[in-house]
Figure 1 (cartoon, helix red, strand yellow):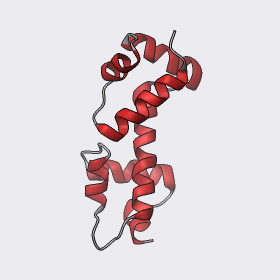
Figure 2 (cartoon, rainbow, N blue to C red):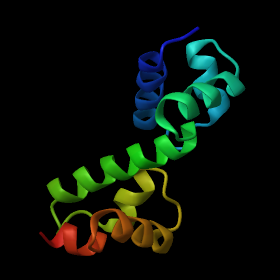
Figure 3 (cartoon, rainbow, N blue to C red):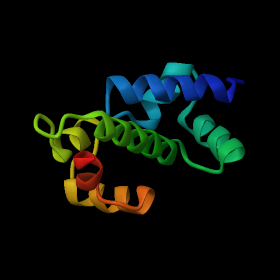
Figure 4 (cartoon, helix red, strand yellow):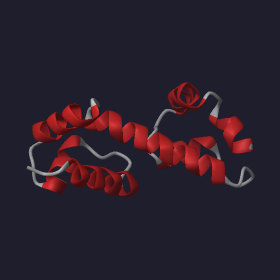
Length: 108
């Protein structure tokens, strides 16, 4: 059976290439069934692959907000790049995760 590290690598690769990765695409990348991917993640991380992917995307968005030029970038553009289609929902999740709004982070 595929190691969790291979799944992690596949998810990271998909998060960078396509912000709308699916469980099926991730499973195909490591040659297992979508159910096997879910089972491995739940067993080892107590998360679904999609929860893990959302957390990973949020981390990438956070890092990009920290490094961004506030005069050239917007929260909406950065959120969209990482697969968050609704800026308001992104802002709520971001505040829950990081304790401040993404706009505050972007402003530095």
